Image (cartoon, rainbow, N blue to C red; front, side, top):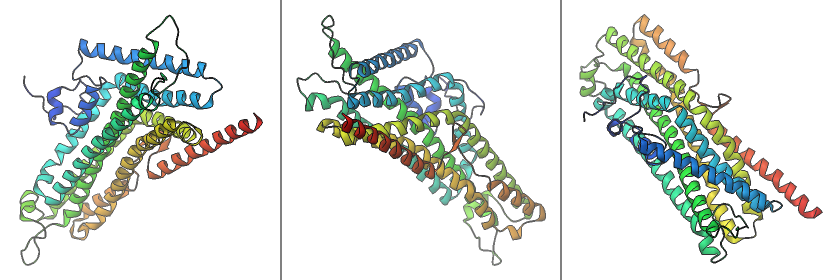
Length: 421
């Protein structure tokens, strides 16, 4: 089979193949989503069966959550557990549906990221500083994904086996306790345990995998902006008066700056790259913004109910479960806010890089083009949640404050009911 090259058309929305991902920057993230059954490489009847199995798990989990709320009505702690599980699984189901409905957009996004990286690869190969930037960002991208899934694996193991360790023989369920076993269904407990464990683990992993996918895309966009900024700063590069080069000879051999014409041509190439990055960020926002909005809303609610469980649960194992889960919604939100803020900062740094080059040595048209770049760089490179809320580190702080506000309100209601009762 002939290998598919990552240089395919940037607007090609055809399904990715296993061979394509072998050379893609997003290889790890796409293959993780494939392993979880939500990203076909390519589609097949086996993959369709896997999707049907995921749908059955989602339905089974929803039924158990409804039963949990119904049978535990009046027990605020148990009802809160059911809601927490519903929020967590709901995020995974929503992301799975979005990826299934808009698979072509996701494939186009992967190809655009790869094409942008290929367009600047020659500069990175020739310049040690640029090469260092790319290596650092790619290490960060891999570490983010590996660290997230390591934490998630430990968390799921704690939740899955806590009832068996803390309450042996009491037939408690891991995520959503149902104090009812129909006599006509002797395996009800075993099946409920299996459905809760499988559905919760699979959909939590899917939710995290898609969060990491978008975070890694933004890390690579940040990488390309950093490389672009270095290219712009080095527009001053030319032999000094004594003939010694101001930059490495290897770089000068690739991009000669011995004339105003060459300097202007290189600036035009930088402008083209900047436009490509802006278009990529706009397309990324189109694909990502519904997912981010859903994740932000559900994370705020999940953090609120987790704080409540941690504060008011009398069961030590429940407190341990809550403590271990509490970082989860925060991590998911912070992945987006941190990576989007880095894009925002590096986008603003384009103007500083333009000012840092030897603009005073350029021709009139070079200076006019550079002013255009600086003016465009003043417009923030934003990604949003639902096209309503810009994402940055300040967004993370405001969402944490919102979670605590809702927790304080829920605690007040609980304390008032306890006093009145």
